[in-house]
Length: 285
Length: 315
Image (tube, rainbow over all chains, first blue to last red; front, side, top):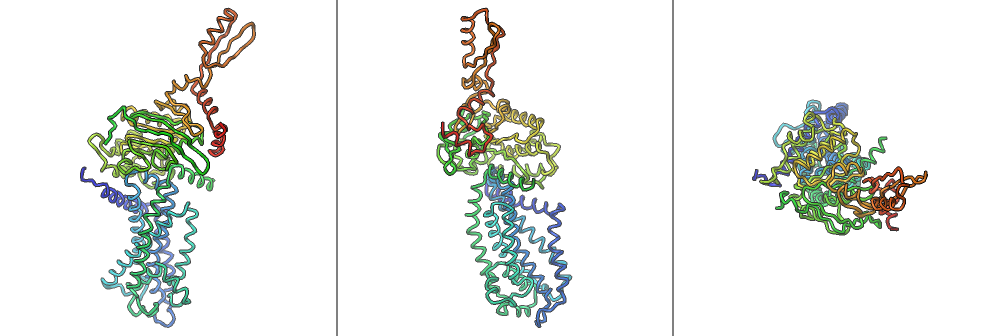
């Protein structure tokens, strides 16, 4: 009993919170559908792309797209994180955390576990049937899985804190929907569905500022044969640059997130939640 | 560390508390104290600033001015150790809907383990607590399937799981049906009696304050305008007793703060001529309405906070 240090308690409570909520998303109908819908849609798209060649490169569009989609999925953790935070601010979950000793840190720990765990699960759901469906992958070696691992971890470090910041800035779940638009735009130009080298130069530059592009590139580098690098910028997988850009996003996010989150947390109060509840109920009624 | 065994000690000490939003003073000069083990109701019309007051004491809102001490600490600068000694009952809406009742209580209990002391074992065992709030039968249910009354009792359980020395309840029975309300009142009584928990609750329901609290503070126009037991307040002269009688076939009524003396003088003057004498003592309700009218928000509380506060400025 005396060994329970507050910080350990907070982290352990956060972990268990994350695991419980992750389990919940796989044991109820609505959440299961959202876990499966996206992979099914993507696999359907991949199925129809599988025999189309990209230009005269000899590469199949389907095999280029599968790892890219995996990268995009990981980047979508940013959206999930921000949506979850806004929604839980609105419904009072965060206020409850604030009323509990160590609750805010633990809540955030739990969210990272839930969102990251959900991402990995979704990745597997997409990857396993994807590998069976799509030819031309080179995912046999331990090296490719190692690359998947570091790109994924660094990618989540780059996107989840930014997601948490976005989730703290939007006042309601409704206005939060707005950030979907720029993210969609980012996805469209980030070379996920079509190699980025076929875009105009200036768009290529914009794409390279986003973490989505680098996550996609990293995943392609892990799962495609080396020859496929020919359709990338500079004919290279650019691992160093990948690490640098994702690292920069991670550093920025991790530096800003505590400040923004603390400011958001300070403002939470019962009457704030009550007000949002009133507004939300008016919308329904 | 202070413990709740220091029974006569002061749990809440508020002096000159002021809260200003823009140019509107919601709280002007709120001053009161509460001792350990007391159940205090903060009563007032809608928009009087009850929630603002309780949120400042909970450490959820920063005050504009004044001194506030809660369990010996300023809530604006309180740490997690202080947080562990304070229970806040929040009005849940749809949070944690997918969690199961016992699972949620057990989870929130974990946070209090490092703050257990010899005198106060923390947390409260989840099954015991569920029994105390009457939710044992729902222990395995998902939170979103609970009825309004059951959810409110779960809110109380979450507020209590750390065995707080001080419990805040903001409008605890709003939206409950009469039976759920009755059960809730019973629960608060047991808490106060069995666990010596200090409780501060807000309500705009006079009967509820009368039923639950040792002491009632009436908040109106940004100030505490009355403070005492229900009986004290009813005796206060703010509301007049009503004396009625007949004399020579005519009916009279007179309002007075000192009905006993008035009746004595009435008989001295008219003696046998007085008939059908009735004295109706001012009820707590009369006192409350009189106080709120006198100090109050003018609009009778029906209007929003903004309009209400403006009327006060003219006083």
